[in-house]
Image 1: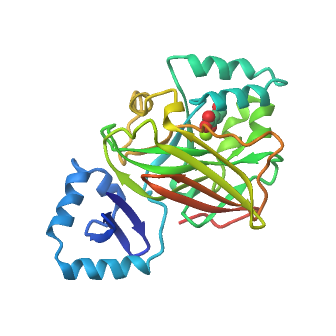
Image 2: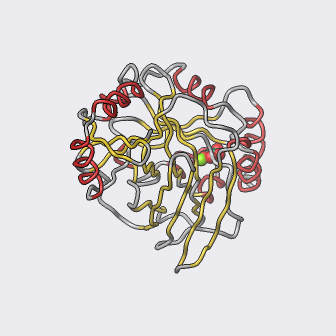
Image 3: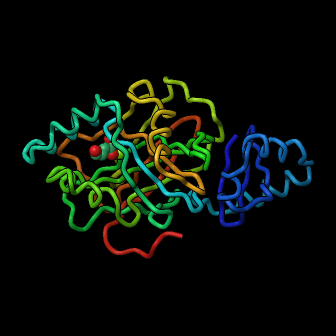
Length: 289
Ligand code: DO4
Ligand code: MG
């Protein structure tokens, strides 16, 4: 089942039908002891009239990023492709070795990615930095973890990154990664505590002037670390009263001569969840709500 956040409240989708969720706060929903059980009850108790009204409300609603007060964190260098790309981009700065070491180390790379106000909604704009010359999207399976450290769902994430800034010096990572609308999440939460199968595909398409400028794909079989281990590391010495989102790293990196441009449209699909679409902009924007 899928949980959608919209401008008129939350809806649960099950077998193609939409049901209104009485609790409208995602913080309260994510803190439920058994979110899946709570949503199942809504579906069971709904009669035909409720269902028809909800369907109508949902079809005219605006989809929002499925985030409340949660912080967004990210794991890095969890795919071989990411390790190799980072080693190459930071070679001149002497940083290449770090990426190789973290790929094989027991402790993963985890970094702070975004506050909710920096997260773009599905269909909204993600940004490239004005001072970056080499910008890419990073399509990532993103975990929803409840305040008790349990994975309770999954969404699609885009970890927008400035590769020239990151490559110049690994200490510039926070500037390469954290800025207004450097992250997108959505279109919904797949509510499940079960691990996704290794065959799960992650696909990206970047469209420029109506033409495919880049497309790529990977599967979760290429993810070197178990999502539960990443979540356990994140929660080791941190409490998250509202839970947290954790992006699990990218396995798709466009060729080195590719950089995003304003007007590009990014489409990221993880089949059991859906497609996250965002347009690229550069320059000042009001904070996302
Ligand atoms: O180490 C830098 C960031 C890595 C990252 O974001 C990724 O591998 O997805
Ligand atoms: Mg990333």
